[in-house]
Length: 362
Image (cartoon, rainbow, N blue to C red):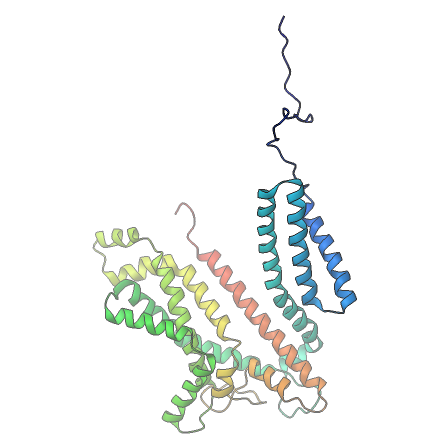
């Protein structure tokens, strides 16, 4: 009479025959990664406290101890292959944390130091006639908005038209030359753009010509290659089937570009333009040369020096008055305001991308 052996239940272990190795290895618990990270942080904190180091050595020590601990634990329980996988995962996570540490440190420092003067007076008063405490950055905020707006009005049409030519029309030496010069402009230092704008206005209007429009020209030199590159990539991803379908209906090429290509790529183009504005709105070197600085409010970009937030923050920190603390407080608050403007522009770029992105099924 034969007997049947029931299969083992999931809770029972299968013993391998004598002389063979089991193909089934153990597995670390789900909380292993967080547990190893917490233990590494505690141990690194004790080491850093004993040696008297700062935040950066603590983060670096935590990353190293975590990678060593999780890989060693995994090798003991799970085997060499899984341990190698966990070691590389730990290295990638540690690299991310190390790269994030300076950003978090800058954000925390700017917010903690900038909130002291983040009040109504700072946003409604200028520095005209102010010595010591008080005053604000209203003139610098308006100057930043004016120069950035003028730079956008100049850069977007030029950059978009250049991108359309490169994608839709250019296929010869001129196209290659434009691409080369756009690549060169992308990598030029910002101080060179300021010197170019200052020299241009000095040749046309005379030496010493410094105004808001010159600063806008310097910013446009930095913005144009970014707009060209972002718009070009967005135009390239428009399917050729859409162009061919429009051509098959007898539509002229300019109308295909205006009615088909640009509406399809408008989300990416708008995002690229907004990010280009966020890129140049915080520039200091070109505005320091081409726009200058003043303590009064100037709404005319074609006459006289004009204050901007970046230059205002630089002068308040580099040349503080007596006493020093009010100037430093204004510098940090200007930096915080500039950081908030850049954050808002990035949020606007994301919103535009989501709003105008092609919907599924259309």
